[in-house]
Image (cartoon, rainbow, N blue to C red; front, side):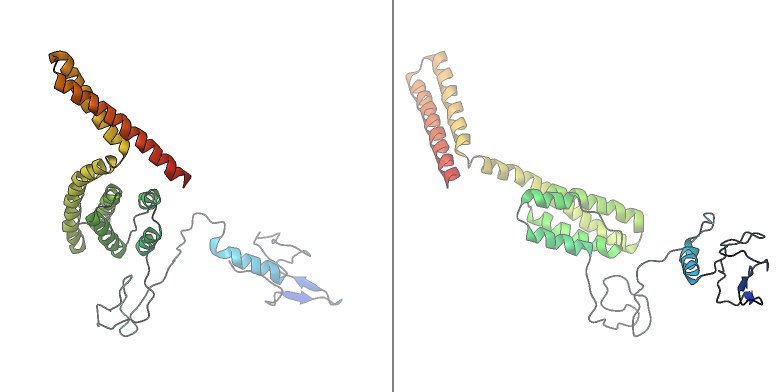
Length: 269
């Protein structure tokens, strides 16, 4: 919407030298300090500040029924041939020109750096669980590679990685399913599922081994063995079984006491 100002020549001077302002739309004489024309109702301004404010408001005016387009971000083109370059490409697909000095970063790269900087398993779990799956093909591919590497290692967060990988696979199917790029993700996804199943079996025995590193676990085991032999001795009155059962219970008590003392010493240190 054009804006009337004192600089556009829409005024006259009377005999006293005073400026008389006129509406630039209908030519009606304006009252002093008027912001709207009393005849046509159009907005007018007699100062530069009002014109500046109106110009700032003009692109997003009060006409809510008018569709407006907002373009954000950057379009990267090859400096050699002008072909549009996809994100994170360092070589132009059209002419093969090598693009040097390009800044390459992504949210997936940032996630990898954050995971490297922390040793806390709970913090890693939170970072993986709250990570937002990106939308671009390049980022989804990069996330697949990162997730596969961690699933292959078989860390404690394998299940969380698999959950996020399934989300990325579903997003890829919705975004570019049926394309050649999506077909490349399928074997990677199946490989991740197979590795995750193997990790689940291995993690059971691994967690069991960690559990028996505790002295209390061994104490419970010896206690259970001792009670079993004592019950059998009560049923069959076998002296040998009674001795074995009693000895196992005593060993369980000794292991539990030594574990308690060891834990107290560690706390003091």
